[in-house]
Image 1 (cartoon, one colour):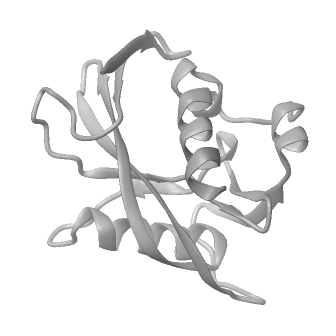
Image 2 (cartoon, helix red, strand yellow; image 1 turned 90 degrees about the horizontal axis):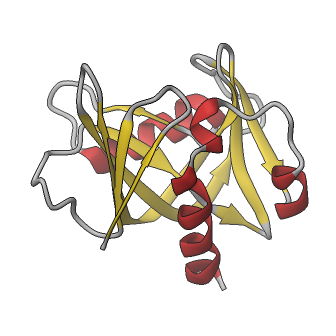
Length: 154
């Protein structure tokens, strides 16, 4: 089943739980997970608070990218990755983003960070009431993604 909507920048987005029907290869990643009842978030220096993620580097699998981006943006090491959805953003540059969840295995005390101010751990209520979310966090697909992770995590 595909959920289609427009993001806050006006791009058409297709969210599929599983692989996207367009058969487009994912080269971007989004990591959505809960640990001890709190969501792992990061504060992007330009966009605001969001889930960690980014783009796979040359020669890197999307699984490797998900692990690396999470470490670089939050200092949190993850394992047991599960790819559960794909976002296809259709705009002047169309791309596919694989959505992962996983398990926390280590939290660095003083991580070296890239593009972010590090890990934020937010309860459901804190996330729902946050006024500093990036535009990515406000689209129609995020509620469905969080529902999936909540069901998986319980």
